[in-house]
Length: 336
Ligand code: KG4
Ligand code: ZN
Image 1 (cartoon, helix red, strand yellow):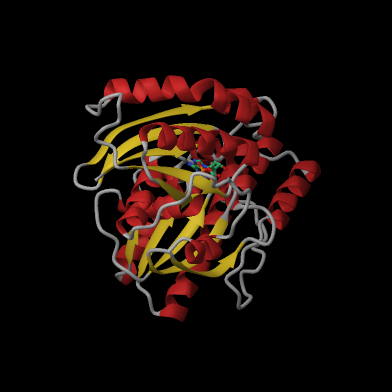
Image 2: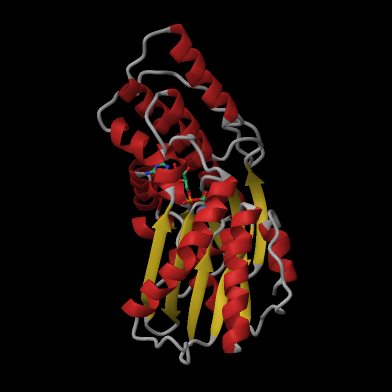
């Protein structure tokens, strides 16, 4: 079974051809980082325009690098991100997916962007259920129990900033550029953990997160004293990683589920990977973190989740429209 996958929910235009037997056939991606850099974050309208500008060229590139012919005869269905995301950006990918589905008479399979991140942990293997998913990206921070494909139970989420967003905001305050996560990650290697930052909601009984207080604390430090940027990067990163590990450990204790995946852009963080892998070894918990290239947004993960949905015979009508924010749990119920 082969799918063509489309992802345009934020600032990456991405397409992939993926087979359930052979894995990735071809994948292409065009990042808009350079365009949004000077604004310190993604500008929705610019993002949509860039998707429009790039998507057909990317499609040509995809087909030219793949053994699949331009007529898409070997492709069984089209997977695409339906929600959540910037609505104008989603519209471009959904319109593209629908046009191909119509022209080539292929079924359409909708995927939730976070579902895509979840299945980025299973590109070359079958998932074993249940497992706990810690989803950490620029737009989301969620702890979810995945009981089966499409059966998602949210344990907790952020009450304010997403963790990737807080990396980006702190990097901006430190004058480090955009996106902040990879820059802080690199700089932190040269710094010391010397600044004591708050850990909001650390001791409460919920599985929720809060990162806006942390950002404010960094701001106060910067205003009060002359800080060393590498030390602040290290202190901030250690604090965030500790919060994420602590809540995930508690989720394992509470549910008794000893299989954990960590996915989304922030799972590219080197310190997060190190700390979660140590935990896995020390306490014999199965921890799966996707390879770096699949941590951040891509279309391979959308294809992988699309395969799971199509295997269950679930497709969408041609008049389907994108939505800016359907929660994962609800989406699972709607499309399973
Ligand atoms: O999953 P993603 O590519 O897009 C969304 O769905 O949001 O995540 C992007 C986020 C950005 O906030 C970026 O700063 C963060 O992931 N990120 C990182 C690292 N690489 C990307 N955060 C911490 N450390 C990294 N190495
Ligand atoms: Zn994402």
